[in-house]
Image 1: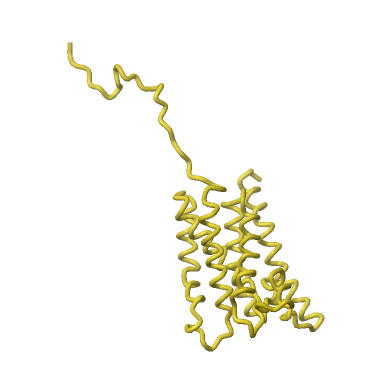
Image 2 (image 1 turned 120 degrees about the vertical axis):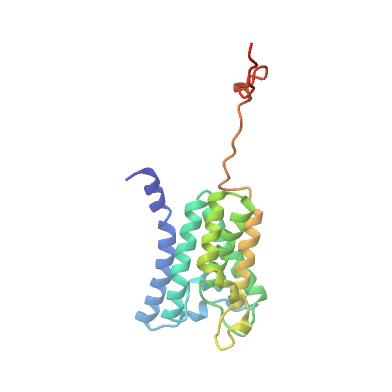
Length: 215
């Protein structure tokens, strides 16, 4: 196994583990016949503070879980592969900043659960970071994110889904968290390669491009 392939697989470990945790939590709810919704974020309530840590791990049903699992894995894997130097920092900052903002600013009459806020944060970070860094490789990721998850933007507009109980505040807070972190940490992590001409190789008195006159 070559080094690049080994690095690629190594950067899948954490995304795979965090996605697995979501499934283990849901299976535990089924096996033990409990509803862990009370571990969500209940805005501005002391008992809702625990949700800042646990809310992204809790899902209302299998459809909710499956809808979040694939994008979480793909986006987290992209973060850990392309931004491996700062991936853990960015991941957990998005995780906690999004949830703290939800606790302060979201509707207070319901628990907010699910990993969608984290997903929006990762998507926003990868999208904006590719633009501000002007790195061709990262810009390619921006295009991929746009193609795969561009429609996610509608999730921050509750009027488009009046019949669904969606935590659009989590989506919005995650989006802003990813945007802010992409700009704040734009000088950390991968950078575009810079090429320099070696002036010592040029002979100013007789440049190689200069056509010699016939004697």
